[in-house]
Length: 229
Ligand code: ADP
Ligand code: ADP
Image 1 (tube, rainbow, N blue to C red):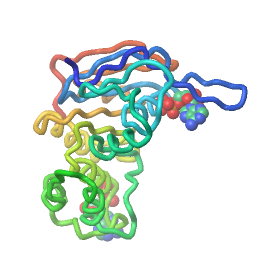
Image 2: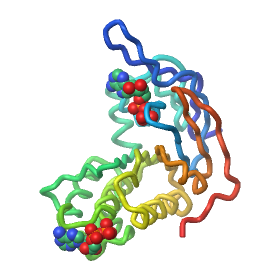
Image 3: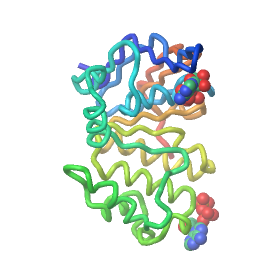
């Protein structure tokens, strides 16, 4: 069975009389350990879908089965537990705490996890051995994004959800971050989902889910995804 099965998913936002259908009849599946890109232009419904998959938001209809459990059956408490236990998030603007060092940012995040990895080791793995006692403002954009990835990975999440993780980075630095995410999937077996509007990223993924006007336009499988070099 696939690791993630989404069937007939609908998510609507209600604003007074108006109803916006942000996700409409979405269907796809994802296998464990895949690197997946959710691709679409602004307003296509990508962030909405990522929020649903990560248990940050509820949905109106359909099934979102992750590791055999349908998120539709979760109450608020169970959704929060799922989010804390199973999900790592990486955002475009890193969301690091400014007055904590790189190491402290990672330590804080793993406090609530059951089987955390050693923060110092994870920071070393992402190439920040010499920088872990620096504050975010002392690090370059790429280094801050690597701290954010270390923070997400140290929880040993089953699922790593990344919203435009290279959006604020220059080309070379972005490449390093993508390489790290590809390694997470290939070497550590994590399921990694990247949301982006940048079609140039598509060749690196095992699976590309194209979203358009709130629904799946097409799904592409890359039998031989491009190595990031
Ligand atoms: P994307 O991430 O692809 O840019 P979003 O998922 O953010 O798309 O948005 C999809 C649609 O849902 C857009 O029309 C957006 O305006 C609308 N939308 C997103 N979040 C909300 C919200 N909290 N309340 C109302 N409408 C929203
Ligand atoms: P990049 O081109 O990778 O985004 P920068 O040009 O911003 O990085 O920085 C280059 C190097 O200088 C990086 O290794 C970064 O850690 C270091 N650096 C940048 N800003 C500071 C700072 N305020 N204090 C200490 N080191 C810094």
